[in-house]
Amino acid sequence: MDEGIGNVTKELERRNMLSNTLFVFTSDNGGPIQGGDSVGARNWPLRGGKHSIWEGGVRATSVVYSQNEDLISVERRGTTYNGLMHGADWFPTLSDVAGYDLNGTLELDGVSQWSAITGTTVFVTPSHHSLTHSLTHLLTHLLNQTRTGTSKTSPRKEVVLGNATDLCSESKKHCGFAIRAGDFKLIRDYGGSPDWRCNTTAGGDQGECDTKHPWTQNLTTCPNGWCLFNVLSDPYEMNEASSESPRVLKEMQLRMKEILTTYRSFEIDPDCPNPVFTNDSSVGKSWAPWC
Image (tube, rainbow, N blue to C red):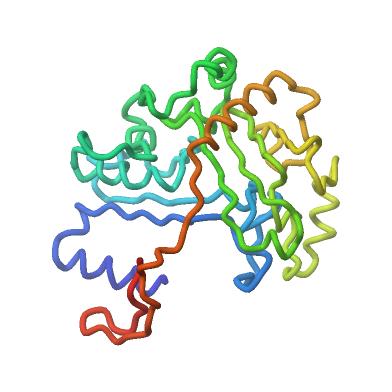
C-alpha cells in the first residue's frame, strides 16, 4: 500500500495537483479476530472485533491529510478528532469539501462532519438526526454533559449499530442491535461474536489483557436481554450499567423500539443473474454483475 500511495502522490505532484488534493484513509470496522478473514488483527483493549457490535468491532480510525491550508489549517494539523461519526457520513462530508449542494436529494443517513473535523464551525444537528420528543429531555442532558471525544463535538448525536454478521449462528450467541447516544451505548439481545478482548492468533496477548484490564463482569448474555454501557468511562465494556442507570435504560429502549420500526432486512434481488468472472477491457478481471 505504501508503494501504491507513493506512486499516486508522485503523479499528482507531477501534474501540479497535489496541493489541491485531500487524502482520506479510513477503516470500515474493527479488526477481524475470528472467522475466515482473521489474519492477526488486534483490537485490545476493546472488546470484540469485526462481525460483532462490541466496541472492538465498530470503532475505527481514519486519517485525513492535505497540503492545502485552505482545507486543513496549520493549527489543525496533527490534531485528533474524536467526534461521533458513522461511515455514512463520508458521502456528505466529501460532498461538502468538493462544494456539491445536496439540498433536494433524497434524505441521507449521513451528515457532513467536515466543519467539525477542521474545527471551523459549531453545528446544529439537522432535524432528521435529532432525538425524538420522548428522548429529548433526558438525552439532551446526557449529550450536554459529555466530554471531549463524544457527540458533543460532532453534528451526529446518535449511531445505530445493526446485526450484520455471519458468525452468530456459528457461535450460538444472539446478535442484536445497538444504539449509541452521548456517553451511553445500549445493546439489545447481545453484542455477538467475537466477544473477547484478545486476539487468539497473537501469542501472549491473553495474559497481558487479563493482567492490565481484568474482567469486572464476564458477560455471556445481557441482563433481561439488554446491555447498557457508558463507553466513555468504560470503553472496554466491562461494567454493564443497566441496574445503575434505569432511567437511561428505559429511554434508550424506547428509542431502539422506534428505530426498529423502520428496519428492513436485506433481500437478494431475484432478477439479478448469477455473477460470473470476466475480464473487462477497462478494469481487468472482475466479478459481474453487482446488483
